[in-house]
Image (cartoon, rainbow, N blue to C red):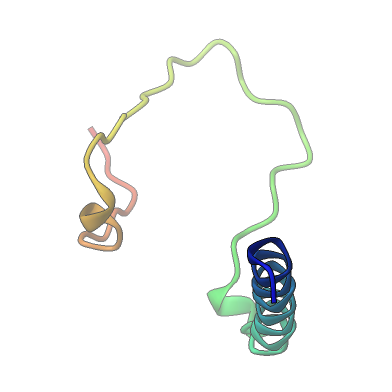
Length: 73
């Protein structure tokens, strides 16, 4: 087997493995409404109120390390 054919076969195998994994992950999605994101508001935003924006910059180890909830000033 030539190097080019070997690389093509490995690429095809990787693509098939990823597509099967995606299909399995789709079946495992949580259908419980409590665990899903809320739908966006149907009306436009109130542009008269200021908006607070927080930009969190870190590496991937930061994912899921804190819980953020609504706060009042």
